[in-house]
Length: 78
Image (cartoon, rainbow, N blue to C red; front, side, top):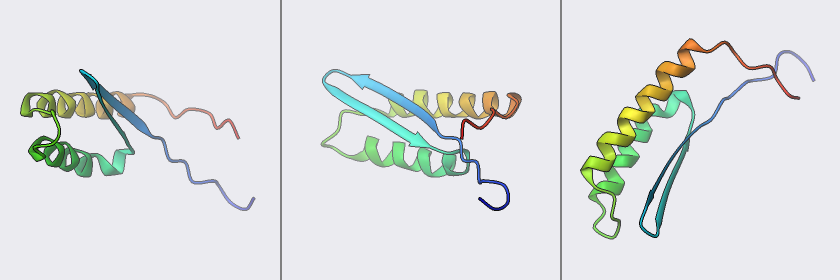
């Protein structure tokens, strides 16, 4: 392999609501798109995701972002 491998860490947020499971996998660059996805899902009348759920998931995503910024990079397992 030439050069340094591109490192892309993924974050996971999950919400279990009754029989529904909402699982969001995203990278730090996609955090704004993630919030848009929350809003789209809450606006979908076929899903039970509420605006309160969106607020909680958004807060958790921001918390994950702050935590990731404070952590040293993990060693590559490859």
